[in-house]
Image (cartoon, rainbow, N blue to C red; front, side):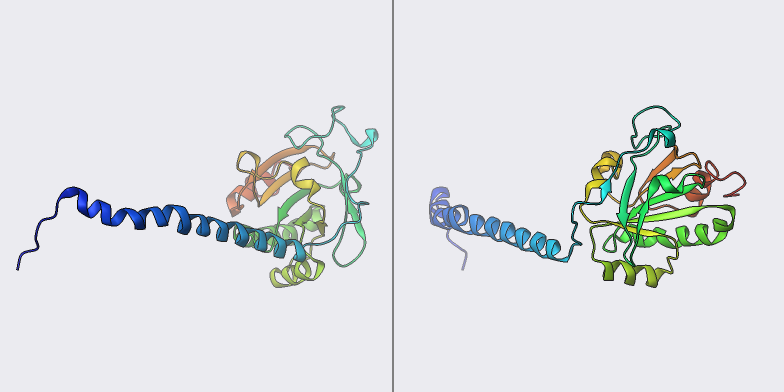
Length: 220
């Protein structure tokens, strides 16, 4: 039997109450659930972050260690913002203390999949050129010591690692540039001047090209 045709307005009238219910109840509840879920997630992440007692972070770069004569800034051709941070195994590291050696400064986190992809290239570069003075510094973003140490052990990271516990370096070093993310890597020459930067996961070729700018004869 053929289905009887209904007047155009009748079906709309029967569906209207359900449409109203969807708009007035279901959608707001869904939005509320997303908001609460987001708050729970960030609260959980916050509980997992490292703590900071305020003694570490960005520090003033001594004038004698600033060959550019301009204020420190995370830009090519300038001295980068100096910092003092704790190492997960104990002790501290200050960036300006590394002057005299070329430095690869890499910002990462264990939950960052592109970071995981590039770390092996940094490990190889450090193992290959450390005898020529190269220093690689891994700056972890706000994770607890045990997570950082486990990650370093998993990937064979023997170069220095520090933790940006308060998250202050992210703004000062303009992580990710326009896209604002990690991994972000800076290539600093032996005088403390930034010679190049890279946003996103480093490939072998990209790393070699930039390494040659701070360590002559490397990257070939």
